[in-house]
Image 1 (cartoon, each protein chain N blue to C red):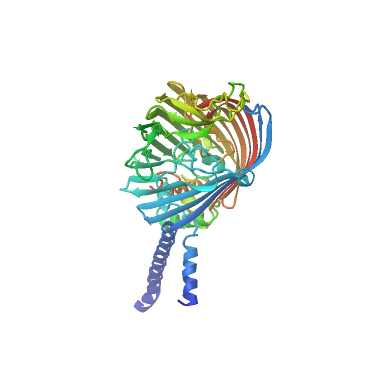
Image 2 (cartoon, chains in turn green, purple; image 1 turned 90 degrees about the vertical axis):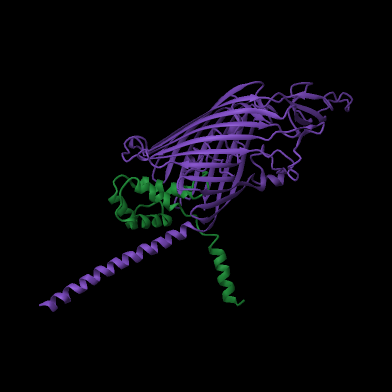
Length: 98
Length: 468
């Protein structure tokens, strides 16, 4: 086995297990769609990805678009839903992956 | 003229088509990115570290005041694996220890359920799977996430950390569970029902077909296994109109537990304290039960949590449990080593071989007990201030053998006041809490039942909670 191949295998071995814990997108999507009808699901998906990078902030352009198109939720409740989605994927509650 | 029209319109049509293609490609790339966050093996970590000062007046054993600084670390290594959208497995290992406890006093971990701070040897806290059988039903089995339930998460500023409300159980229990989430028939409300079956494993681990005798002196009488069933109802309301509250969580829970008797074991205990002029019992006893069943226990629990009440930044919670205990077997303690030698006769009047009746599980005869926990917190942008109050009535069943805190509250009967301030850092993944806890203890659960233990304990601490 050559050196480059060995390094590649080692990198895959390191990157896969140490990836950050994500959140349950299905729960995130269902919770928000339950409160407002969104014509553009892409905004929801981009907001979710934005929250993985920085969940404390609704300053991202997609989060702003989402909030302006849905009056039923505000920034705090959006963060709260994301945190609950994160919790559902963490193995903290029995059957929590629903 | 036609040529001019074609030259003008064609690029517009093409641009529209390209725009659609780009949007479609963007959506597909986003789906891949989301998919990458959902399907993989994850390794996570949690650390809950305390630094504090504990003072204690009216120490029962020694009669002297105690003042000491302490450091404690609770460390959890978490794993999760997603086979596909319908099957996920979780596991976590935990170690809890006071700083350098192994250096000064050796703490030997023997996997004993009665040791909440077990030393630096890790134990399995969770190891279970969630298997979605259909759109609404999830089957779970293994060592379930039954510790650190609500409202424990609120003081950390995190999402829910466990299944059972904290006032009912805080034990890592193995079991089988079926969670059914109903279709949405109440507006803005998620409703679910969960049944949990906890079987016991009271048998010879290597030869489970043999059973386990209660004691060597009575090999024909085999111990019965524990068995428990819990039914939970959960509702989370997130109304569109947030004038009254932002979200409301309700949990109703009922448990029936049949406690099997234990296999005889040897341990030190304060059985003859106050007798024979003995102030600190140094005897070693062999404990045994006179029947295969220890007790039948019922527990009913209510949990309510409301966030952003009346449009303010105030959250509040209330949790109450009532337990009904019907003890069956009597427990005996046989002195196998007289460490007191109270008369100083070198053992001629030794208690060795003498048997003492030490009562029944939790209480002598039928009893009821309550445990109530309520509190509130006020939220700032990246921090919050909170207060909570914990109170027991009579003798509730003990519930808190795996607490992260310095003092496991579920083992005591009394009152506790706790005031704290939590600040969140780094995307809310790190929280630092400073707090004062005042504990007025009337009784403390030891081995099988509560013993008088009048103590006033005050803890001032800083706690760091970090999760990856």
